[in-house]
Amino acid sequence: MSSSSLFLEAHARRRSLWLLAAAVFLVSLGVNVHMAMNVNYLHDLLQATSWQQGYLESLRESLGVCSFFLVALLAGRSEPRVGSLMLAIVGIGLASYSGLTTIQQVIAASMFWSFGFHVWSPMSGSMQLGFAKEGQEGRTMGTLGSVGTLGVLTALGGVWLLRTVAGFGMRDLFLVGGALTALGAVPLLLMPAIRAPAARPMPFRVAWSPRYRLYSGLELLDGMRRQIFSLFAVLALVQERGVHVEAVAALMFVNQLLCLPLAPLAGALVDRVGERPVLTFYFAMVGIICLLYASIPDVRVLFGVYILDNAMFMFRVGIPLYANRVVRPGERTRLLAMGTTMNHIGAVALPAIGGALYAHYGFRLPFYAGACIAAVSVALVQRVPNRRAV
Image (tube, rainbow, N blue to C red):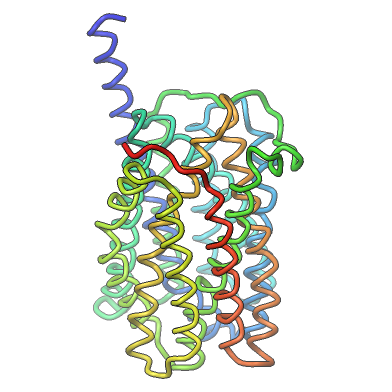
């Protein structure tokens, strides 16, 4: 291959990564405008109980269980083009929250945008790995993770400013978040028409075959653990401590500011030392964090624990990187979609169960369950084979 051909290939990769980064930024920006207000919106405007919020989260996450099937239906088509359609769906769904008045309407809207988001997620991961240089997959995913974090920071800062300075209501901000998410479809339309393999889902028997079962198991456990914190950590702050939406947005802003340099560092660390030590550290720390959240009464200390948990989330990048190491040629998008499914099987069950436990036994029990899940995960990670340090 000529040097000019190599240059063009490298140039096309860089351009595609820049366009993908723009889409990732806009999606993260728009979705996190929504997430910064979601718990307060349901609690303050719709008077939703903890059980209803858990039930709603389970329904929304149920679309993630179908990711492997949804992606398979769309395989054989251009991943950037399909991604652009999905981001338009997400944006429309998020914008619709501005006019919702009942829990039933929220359920319908959340199912709509969740469909688009759960097709987009594995496709985004596959495109990141596909455009990365060999041996720099972790660094690339970490860098794109930082771009997403920058979108979160912009969203949270914007929510705080527009709420406190400009006097925007939550319903107005839902329109803003939806429009920004839909705008993420534009850079994807400018990318080359990369096509996924033939349209066929990955059977569960393949996902749980000896080659892939460790990856599937780690995704399942991490989905269960993740959902405990993503729902019940903020819910406990709002319901138990009376924290308002502006404080939640400010807390998330500080958290993401600290996470900004961590994502590329975590990815580069996996490239250097391998997945096992990084994931051991990750799951051990989140187990400790769950115990702290269940036992510390001081809300200011809980803010710090919340920030620490989200910082640790950057280190889960070892899970998809392990999948990329063991996947067979042509199966990456399908395997990552199945990983999303595994992740969401746990995420679907836990919110409804955890919401009922929260309502009857208090907020501590879900976090004790999270600590147990983390302990099992640490044991499972020890089966990840070592790889030579780069």
